Length: 235
Image 1 (tube, helix red, strand yellow):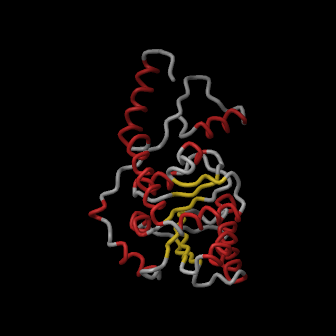
Image 2 (cartoon, helix red, strand yellow):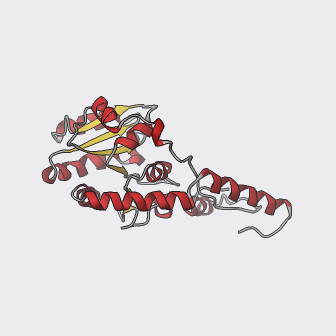
C-alpha cells in the first residue's frame, strides 16, 4: 500500500515495485473536535501574533527538502504588500541556524518566527489564517489534509503528493514550482481576500470529509486485504 500515486511512481522509478498487488490509499486523519481546541486568539497571543495580524503557518522539519529558506524569500515579497502578515514555522531540524541567519539578513526578525518543536499543532492550525507547505519533494502531505480538516485554505508546491490533495483554485493554490515569487503571489491573493480564504477553507473541509478521513482510509485498506485474500484483481 502506498500513500499516493506520486509515491508509487517514485518506487517504480527506483525499480522497487513489489511483485504482488499494489494499492494507492491516501492517508486519512481524524476530524478535529473544535470544542476541545484552545481559543484562536489565546493561541495567537501565546506565539506573539496580534489580533489584527494575518497568520501564515507552516508545519515542517527544518531540512533542505522542506524549502523553508524559499519561504523566507517569499515572505520578503509578502511583507511589502501586507505589513501585518506574520509567518510561523513549527518544527526543528539541521537548517535552523541557516534559516535564522537568513531571517536576520532579510530583515524579517519579528515577522518570520521559528517556533521549534510543538505538540500543539492542532491549536496552531486552528489559529492560522493560511497554511503553506513549500516542500520540494513530498510523497503525500499530511499537514495539508490536517489544515483542510480545520477549514483552512492551503498553499503547496506541485511536488508529488500535494497534487493529489489540493484542488488548485478551489481548496487552495498549487504552485507549479517552488519559486518564492509564485508562493508569495498565492499568499498575497489569499491574505488580501478574507472571503476567498473562507470559501477555500470550506471547500477544503468538504474535500477532507469526502476523501481523507480515517474511516475512508480504513475501509479502503480492508477492501484491499479482502481483494488480496480472494486472489482477485485489485484496483
